[in-house]
Length: 191
Image (cartoon, rainbow, N blue to C red; front, top):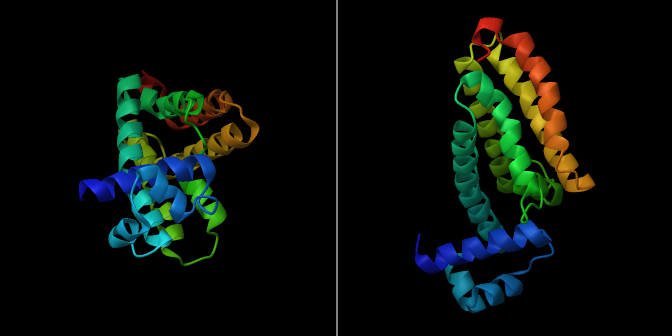
């Protein structure tokens, strides 16, 4: 990716996160990135193409950050399953928390069978797969079912943190997650 294209994507991510997708026009992005609209359209044929590039880039950056953070916050697979919520709490407490970019995108682009929706669904599926891999490593009874439940708790805590402004929603979700994890992971593996 060229440096100018990357700058446009980074600028778009910041503006989309803070102001939303529909409220952030091409003019605003071009102005913030200090480029002309002609330069913008040289790199992206449409706003939707820019949104997709921003979502795809954010996907890689965010998942990498999240997964590394979970690994750093806990030493064992059992602890990492709960660490997901500790990392979420840190994310929610940050100054630049505007909710989940993918939830926000689906909220604004709710039509089925669109590239934006598919990109958001792929991100959520990969996050659930990450949690499922942790459940497999923890030797949970039914890793897929546990991952689905923990993902649901994580999603609920994200929305609660965003809508109600409650960064403590991750702690509430963690308490519920602990019950689920303890019922699924054998006692001798809960280290």
